[in-house]
Length: 203
Image: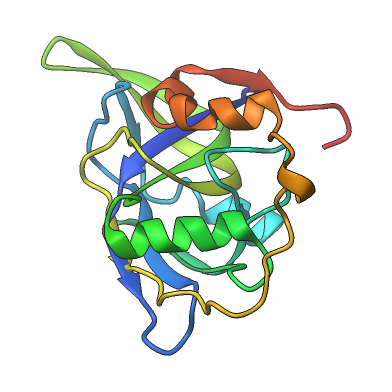
């Protein structure tokens, strides 16, 4: 069992709801194949966390310092992997609207998720060590620019966001965003997969 919060990223195939702006479907984790980090997620790894913790929020690039940009409305394990249907807050968040536009344009097409390992086992296959992830706590899912597992797919991209109404989550008066926020694009994808963070006390 681990008390470390880790990140894993996957390219994804996207599918958008035609009549619902900001709604997308994606397979955000794939079962059975070994990713670039030497991990293989076993089917059933998310069953307990989805039952006990419910549906996770959607963040941009694992940015825990900002409010979520969306919410997962449905999540389930399939034979392929972890499928989610989620809604971006395109009517109230400028960042969500930007991510939505990136998904529509095909430049944001990969996903990552934050997790804690509760059960895993190392096995040897063809002379290589594979870490099988059997039980995970799922904390959030994030669209990212660069992923770790080439087998995930974004099933349905979101519909374009409405253009009327000013989003409210960006700094007012031309203020510079925090330095950590400006660094986020450089930290997406495989770098996050190499990071581990201790979960704050009480969470």
